[in-house]
Image (tube, rainbow, N blue to C red):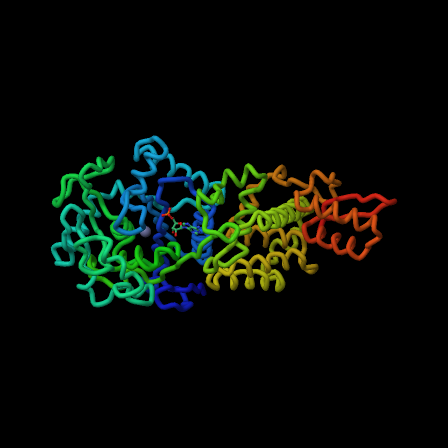
Length: 488
Ligand code: AMP
Ligand code: ZN
């Protein structure tokens, strides 16, 4: 039984598709705005979406995973004000908005492939769904839910709804966004939002389309997701994902538009929201110089799989703080896992237990693993089960090998496709001080000093820290040999 925390009910609920007895699941994921490089915060969000898809498929659901590409209409304020991120990005990079969209869409999928994120069943661009977005807005207009602000756009009148903003647990018409009404002259309620925007005088936008209201206009960001999800998944969706930043506005607006348009409730049965990744305790931003792409991670000598493992070690609903020290620890764990995997792969296969699927211990590990991942994607607990399984002394090597590959079909570390050359260090491999990560080099020097001072307690304590990081220190005839850990 898969359980998910639903932002709508604020509870963990048992998952069952919106169409009872169906094994088909429609999942819509808010995709990237392709105005700049995909960063590690995005990677975390889409890795966790990927785990969700894998968990559902493992439970025999047929998942249609639709993910959009926002290539127009997302304004820098995340609201109805400011420049379009695409037009701004085009100026920054000296490209056309269209070239920019293509470049960063390519970079997004390149990053996803590196992270072993399965491609969505369907990826759809907002600029290729202009007509369906227009149809939706025309329908809302016909139903009397819109008004026009001259020289600005077509707005949704949220006061016409019985309920608005349920997702965020409060009514955003009154709090905490009172300031919003001041932002745009002519807005009737603070929570009203743009469905369609008009080019401003002198703006000279690159991405514009004619509409009944203005010859040079473009869709609002929220309407993209409503129109594309309805077109590709129907009026009601099983699961919709996005970052927590989308709850109060973007998703509240999607619900308002979609339910008014289709006249069906609920638009989405389970709303799944991912918490944010911070870097060294700060919000990621180019100006703070803490904005990392997958290429930055690789250039610093880390494997994408180590980053994936780091993400899996935290819960998607908790904020995660990225540091290079934590990535280093994760890289060591990944190397250890690879060592074990290749050793198991090479060890002689015991065919007698290949048929022994009912083996009690192996069944128990499978159950524990599935219980963890199916419990609102508790990936860190699932990893704990994996390590316990590898340490278990009653299982044979071939049983462990099979379980490891089974678990990895959900974790998506891609063990089966890894080559032994990915193994940077072999068990018991002797190393020089300069081979160690910088932090350990310093610690090694500290230990040498402690040894000279005959402070053996401190030397032993530092040896323990090395062991935790995956290294052995062997004191031999007055000198120290540094080695990787022995096999398991
Ligand atoms: P954007 O490209 O800004 O439209 O974001 C695409 C998705 O990534 C959205 O669901 C965001 O909520 C999510 N996202 C953006 N930044 C981060 C971050 N630092 N950590 C986690 N998710 C993020
Ligand atoms: Zn969206």
